[in-house]
Image (cartoon, rainbow, N blue to C red; front, side, top):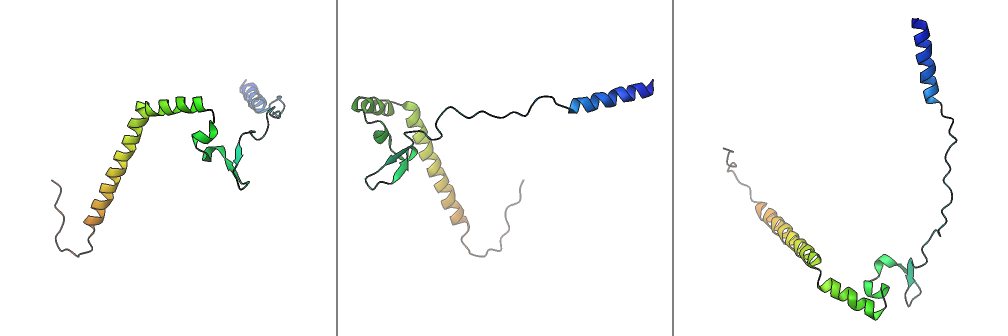
Length: 116
């Protein structure tokens, strides 16, 4: 009986490792490899990526530019984000300034205050 169980478990373990599914081959994508508006050429003929262009150069329609300008001017979340970035820059500048001031280069014989 133990031999039968051992044989059944071994067979089950071996069959669990076998796969009758064929290897998957991904079909070719039905889209172009490169986006047609991916680059822009400047006056010198050099191509620049779209990510490097300003939004006014990408969206050339005047009415669309007005809508984008209004939404940027009235976007409170954007204003808050810009103010948070400026605040973080000021804070990091202050901390760097204080750390430079703390390392004056003068040798000192005093020991730091013990923690209480």
